[in-house]
Image (cartoon, rainbow, N blue to C red):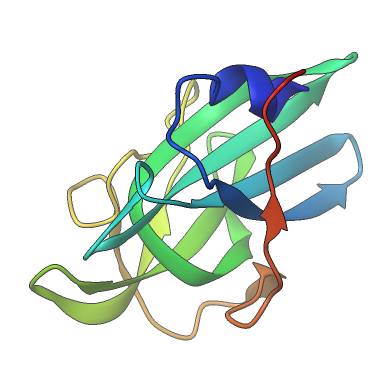
Length: 139
């Protein structure tokens, strides 16, 4: 319901892939959209969400990301760093680290405070070959 409401004006078809990560008292849900309004030559939008009761708080809305998406063991301001792949749209292919600033994650993996990373330890939460799910409009 949260994703349907957030994308109510989006052009169909809209699909997404998602993954969850949790540790102690922290749980994150990552959702990467797949569709004409959320993807371009540089990649697709990624939402980083924290469950709050029966809804979610948006901690990040990141542009131009590609899978795999990883939650790293390193932390910034109390939350784990997120790593995404960057390529296409003229970018040199690399993995970017998205830090948390205390309120939100970096919104663009090609601009500071995001930075290149290589081989940082972490867990894949959205795989490159992961099946997408169709997001159906609200009735």
